[in-house]
Amino acid sequence: MGEKAVPLLRRRRVKRSCPSCGPELGVEEKKAKGNPISIQLFPPELVEHIISFLPVRDLVALGQTCRYFHEVCDAEGVWRRICRRLSPRLQDQGSGVRPWKRAAILNYTKGLYFQAFGGRRRCLSKSVAPLLAHGYRRFLPTKDHVFILDYVGTLFFLKNALVSTLGQMQWKRACRYVVLCRGAKDFASDPRCNTVYHKYLYVLATREHQEVVGTTSSRACDCVEVYLQSSGQRVFKMTFHHSMTFKQIVLVGQETQRALLLLTEEGKIYSLVVNETQLDQPRSYTVQLALRKVSHYLPHLRVACMTSNQSSTLYVTDQGGVYFEVHTPGVYRDLFGTLQAFDPLDQQMPLALSLPAKILFCALGYNHLGLVDEFGRIFMQGNNRYGQLGTGDKMDRGEPTQVRYLQRPITLWCGLNHSLVLSQSSEFSKELLGCGCGAGGRLPGWPKGSASFVKLQVKVPLCACALCATRECLYILSSHDIEQHTPYRDLPASRVVGTPESSLGTGASQDPGGTAQACEEYLSQIHSCHTLQDRMEKMKEIVGWMPLMAAQKDFFWEALDMLQKAEGGGGAVGPPAPET
Image (cartoon, rainbow, N blue to C red; front, side, top):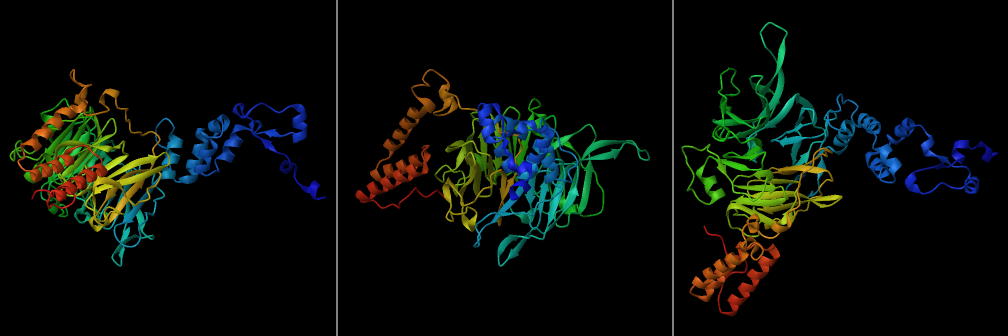
């Protein structure tokens, strides 16, 4: 009786039939197996509907089993149902070759994580995710709040996100989020790392503007809206002519002379100056939009992106060139090691950096910078007092210097006196590396800091793509866009060893990168020293210059100290102290 009560479908076995799964069973075997049913006999719509209820992780794993399930799991209809389930309020799936799959993965992988410096908790915590957000494209933490921009141009305002409990920063689970504005393209605030200075938020957006007052005809125009970060109240707005369209905004300068740099779709830079101390006053005034000198004197350049700090700006062209604006003599000396070409009367004149290859993206700190070229190599330049360049020593670099033990980073970030690199450690994991000052817990696991990039004690999310650090917290943004990939190239065989100049000339194969010439120069410097102790100190200094791993440099420094002590010399263990 119990056997007859079992439904027929439960007693039958469903067989997955696929060309890659082997030959069909014979007639006798089919009878012995109980006449199994092939899954290919089901309507494709029914199979897609059933599969769409799987979690995204299981769906991807199922698509890797055979060709049939790969085609079914990759169908746009399946991803449309998954996207509707993940984001039921999503009105537009966006653009692209695979819009529904891209939208579903963006919303599945979106997340904002933070880790407070100091305290007992040393793990990442996930923030409250706005349900209306279509993925996370950019974020900006302020003193008390967090702003998030999604892929459809909606800017979210997470109010009172962080609270201080017994001196430790924690994410407020009950924080609420509101839509600050729509149609946003980009946003920026004070470029300093200290969130105390983030008083205003500048939003580059597109708005409908009436052509003639009193009529219904309108036209889309770009504008810059200024909001108070404390309340989200709009205090200022400037609208541009409809013929000018922009894609990026950055800030530079002091509060009383705040310069807004706007990058057009054609790669030109325009600037205007506002006084932030007067923005909260209810009055209107006219500002002048002028072409920046980098676009005025170099009209053939097409700028692809830009970044800034309080006193300098970095431009990256579509051909991979890099141009610099430095506005203060102190930062100029830290970056280039000299004031020879600094003109205090013409601070906007761009300076071209000498680089070995096309630059893809960059990061700019207070007085140091990082560059990543098309081959995935990292170059650092500037002040190295705390070891924030990651070169293994604390010697300043007046020109881009390659960090040879790091390649193909996902993103690079430079702060006040430390640097962070997000890299792919394996196919299914990522890691966070850091160097420089470790005070205040800003390098988790390395409280004394490091002059080389070391692995930090941070559990990085699988889909991490951007990071930012303030005085109190480390933030990591998680989002995966299937249509965005860093186009790294393989380094040619002739340029694997040494610099790109090694392939020039007839003696490139005998002396790649001019290594022999550099060694001869080092020997002549050692020979010019008169005493053994001076030669030892000079050798220590040369070891710091050479492109060696940190462990190798420590070995040579320790060995030289042992030789000095054997000869009766003093000297402390380790590299020589930097000059004051």
